[in-house]
Amino acid sequence: MSETAPQTPETRSGFVALIGAPNAGKSTLVNQLVGAKVSIVTHKVQTTRAVVRGIATHGNAQIVFVDTPGIFKPRRRLDEAMVTTAWGGAKDADIVLVLIDAERGIRGDAEAILENLAGVRQPKVLILNKVDRVKRETLLALTAEANTRVEFERTFMISALTGSGCADLLDYLAERLPAGPWYYPEDQLSDLPMRQLAAEITREKLYLRLHQELPYSSHVETEKWEEKKDGSVRIEQVIYVERDSQKKIVLGHKGETIRAIGQAARTELGDILEQPVHLFLFVKVRENWGDDPERYREMGLEFPR
Image 1 (cartoon, rainbow, N blue to C red):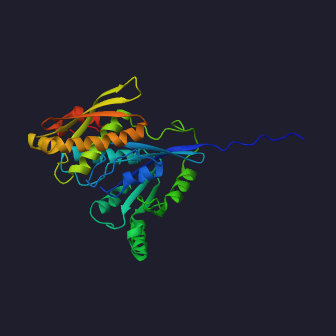
Image 2 (image 1 turned 30 degrees about the horizontal axis):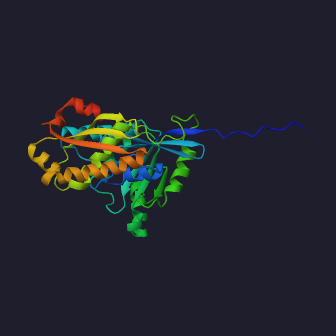
Image 3 (image 1 turned 120 degrees about the vertical axis):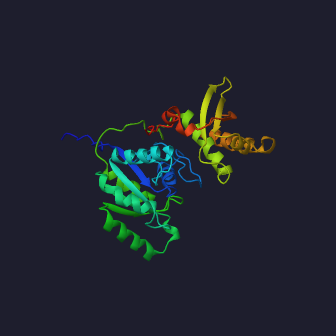
């Protein structure tokens, strides 16, 4: 009797976009699902500016998560570019996860997002986040209201911070994605270039240190990346602000603030790269950089006309 060779399970892959209001927890959830930090997280709203992809391997499926900027009512050119990018990321995905902060409920930006989902044809899944802080009856009422407004395929109640409910979400997505080859190598966690990720980490430390004092209009660029013979890496970055008064805030008294930001970024970069990091930060004034098309291209955003 001939032996039958064991069948290899077919692979699945696809793109899953997360959309939601600012600070709903999208970046925290992407990092939780991927199992590594690929998107920065701060208390400052609209921290994520461009599309960031995190890659999770779950069983025979490769799930490419697209962390989009928070969707809100734009007031400036940069705001408009981010909101356009977020909706574009949703319409290009195989599945759209709509994240709602269960504490805040369906109001304001979250309500506007539900109203505009009619233009998104992809399968939609409702994610209620921060459910550990909300009573069960409130969660059930939110679920009923959201599903009355939008035809969601499934609803998941999770805590992006603790990971509660995330395993069930991964199981569902792994089964729901279409059959097909993987887009990335198995050990790759993000498609963000390391120079850009390094700049994002420094921007995160900048906002964590100065989120009450520093305006949103600041930007970090990695200008030099040099691998040294001793196995370390030398990184030079520039923090761009729009006014001299902002430069003084970033530098701090006798340079104390910029040193603290650099130390925090250097420590985290060293952990990610698994090599010693020599990080040098410079602060420059670039007036009205938010109106410069070149800056938008560097952030992966389309410049609004």
